[in-house]
Length: 122
Figure 1 (cartoon, one colour):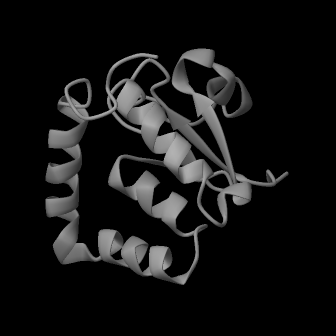
Figure 2 (figure 1 turned 45 degrees about the horizontal axis):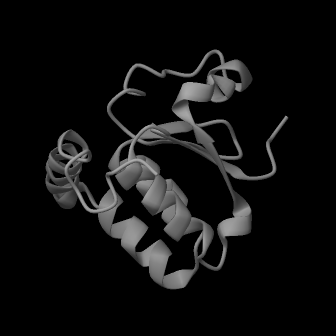
Figure 3 (figure 1 turned 135 degrees about the horizontal axis):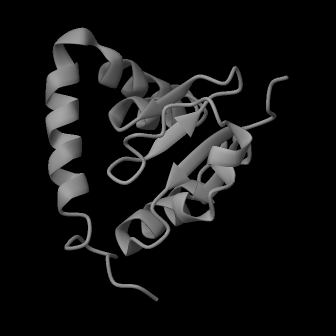
């Protein structure tokens, strides 16, 4: 059975992450996304067979067909839902020559997310 929306699983204890979720919620197409903090355990209950090994270090997205993505590929899955310009950015993230750069940039941001703007807890 397919789910209605793309599930976005993020670090709910990270202010930078919460700020970006708030931004995503304000965009056209956000109604096609569902957001869950990784700490809730709900995503793991809904998709027990998924590989959640990177959950502590990367955003995850579960597409309607059940495919699970982490890091920049999760961002691409989210962007696919947000209109033509966002889909173009998603294609760029998936472009084979750009993948190492996307992974490296994502890793730098993820490792420093607690120092970035919006990182302070409310």
